[in-house]
Image (tube, rainbow, N blue to C red; front, top):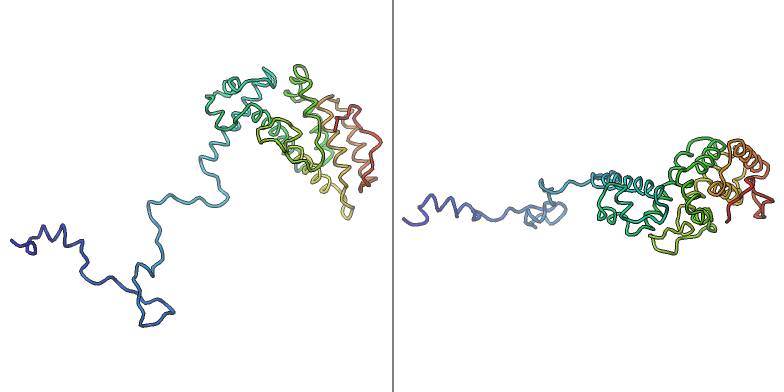
Length: 271
């Protein structure tokens, strides 16, 4: 039997061969007599099996998992530093976090990177807690939180020199020159974040039509807050300081750039 008369042959082979010329489509706006292949004229169609695209601004499950793991690592690092000080090892941090060292190294390459992230996380918590509440209340809350912070207390006893480094505020506009793994707080953008938060609070708190407070007022408040790293104050002293700071701001909303005669808190932090 010839191939042409074999139904099996027709089914397996001839059905794959084109029976006619490829479909052609007239392109809109082109010469009516001009035709192109339909495959060229038709826009690409979505593939059902393709990986779905994530909407802009949403977070993937992997991103959420990474954030949770990082938060757990910082909690573990906090516990490890409380127990061992800033000389804690990566193995101790991993053990306190309940993860393998490889997992820790996936997020932080060095111990200094962990410590820098831990300090930045403490500042982030303070900034978030102080948002959307009156300035005076925010300052009192931040000063009390800094003075009573468990990490601060542990370092004050075991490594007071580390607190001096933390309380040293870099000049305005300082950008980190070291690597992102540096634990040197003076090279960390957390102070710039604190400055931005104070600026926003001062601007929001000023009376309608009043001039914007100058940078000196912000620096005075920043150094006052940093001083509680070295010398916590009681509630009465903190309330007195806040009244003095805000009263001074109200009487002199625009700073001339000259030095202030003093710091409300008697143990002002080095700057």
